[in-house]
Amino acid sequence: MAIFITAEIGINHNGDLGIAKDLIKISKEAGCDAVKFQKRTIDLVYSQEVLDSPRESPWGTTQREQKEGLEFGLAEYQEIDRYCKEVDIEWFASAWDMESLKFLDQFNLKYQKIASAMIVDQEFLRASASRKKYTFISTGMCELADIDKAVSIFQEADCPFELMHCISTYPMEDSDANLNCIHTLRERYQCKVGYSGHESGLAVSYAAAALGITSLERHITLNRAMYGSDQSASVEPSGLRQLVGAIRKIELAMGDGKVGMLDKEVPIAKKLRAHINSGLATAYREKASHASGSRSEKAKNKSHQIGVMQGRLLPKYQGLYHAHPVGYWQKEFDLAAELKLDLIEFVLDTNSLEVNPLMSKSGIAEIQTVSQQSGVSVRTVCANCFMDAPFHSENNQTVEQSLNVLRQLMEHCAQLGVTNILIPCLDEASMDVPARERFVNRLQPALDWAKEYQIHLALETDLAPREFLALLNQFDSPQVTVNYDTGNSAALGFDPAEELATYGSKITGIHIKDRTRGGGSTVLGTGDTDFDAFFQALSKTDYQGPFTLEVYRDDEGLQIFQQQLDWIRPKLQAWGANQ
Image (tube, rainbow, N blue to C red; front, side, top):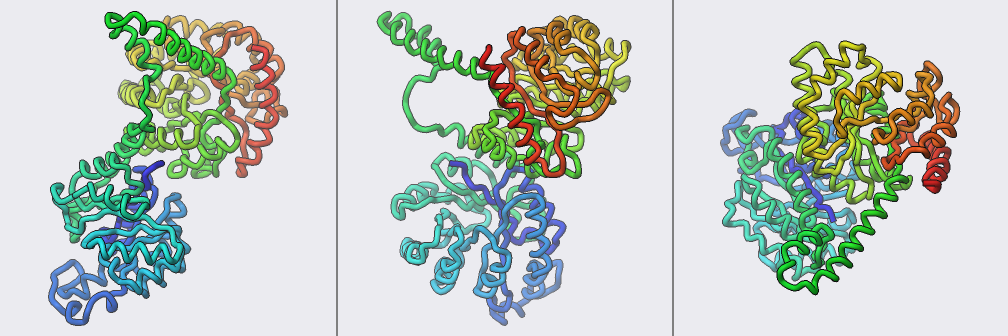
């Protein structure tokens, strides 16, 4: 089960809504599941004596001025609620008094948090438990008797909860972490247990993840040097991305705990143990045969894998549908799973290059987690960024930057098991003869990388079949292949039989869409694509790759996609049955 990761903004926004929104955006892009704030009614939480006492701060010289300067009111929380919905991340807050608890009721939040300071207030606990919201209960500054009472209150109210091991020092010394309390809490209360950390580094959080926590909360900040008592115990943006990425890898690495030889280990065991007992050979052969059979079955099924171009199932991103949907791409995996699709072809475009999860290790870890949970894989990437910055550009700096992006992309894609990176060379990136020479020369360094990472650079061009084949032959590399697009072929007036006979085994990816001759995309079956001729020609090849539906869509998205999927699936199944 995935660890629920909360980025605690708390009061590190320093009363600035702009900073709060920046931290929300950073948390979403890092892959956090939620952000959390703190809500106080100043005159209820602090005595008049404390509020009148001196304290230098950016807001004045008294405790009251400092605390009121840090506190958000209704207008700010309304904007936080709106903005979190916009970027698609959950938010909640730890209330520090009964009025704040009531204040938060108006936002219909899914979660609530009991701060360590509030766990001994039984009246507050009963009021919180009566909300029936899933509750995270921090156990800092607690004795077992305190936790016993809190747990009994939530159990009696039938309110779902989990405990969070916590040490309430800021920052916490690693030597004080006492992470074995996670086991103690889990065994004593037979409930989920998370970790709320106040350390300045990341190692303790990694260790907590390896101990099987179900939630993790860390304070975050734009800069630890900023004003505030919690800043030094917080994680900066780069650290947050590193933290989330590593946590997702730890989740994958923990496995299911079942002991047994992996299929991958069979040939190694056979080789390294050959001198010990030849009688083992039979067992290895049986295991290897089973593994080989599994792989063969997977290869066979690969012919029938159907995917969707990223963004086709979701609301348009900034009015665009052929773009990486920043901030809500994860939703498409569950939608694809519901439609019984196997794959999503990720999009890497210029506008989202820096925040696209393909371009960071933490992002790759998040894709792996989302893919594992949904059962929908990423095996192909449409690198639209190379249309804006093509390899055949006459600007050497543009080409150098694109090569750097491509190398980093291949390194990360290899971790996902991506087999095809689509490089579009059409429309505004179309190539004349001189451009083709530049393209071949400039892309030569990438061939070694592609071989190293076992990734195909699948070209999509508007060249006629013989010209395209001549371009492929110039590379003379099995790593440079063809991505065939049924709609583009129809729009250009090409004959699919001629194209497929020309490219043959060089085709490693196929886009399914319909277009009119010389025009744009249209609903499958209503344009000039001759799908019967296409599948008939395809049956004469040994194509084993996926089919990616890059189909027409409107503002509705999902409904029009479902209609086209229902139309094309029988044709794909009929083709597969004849292979």
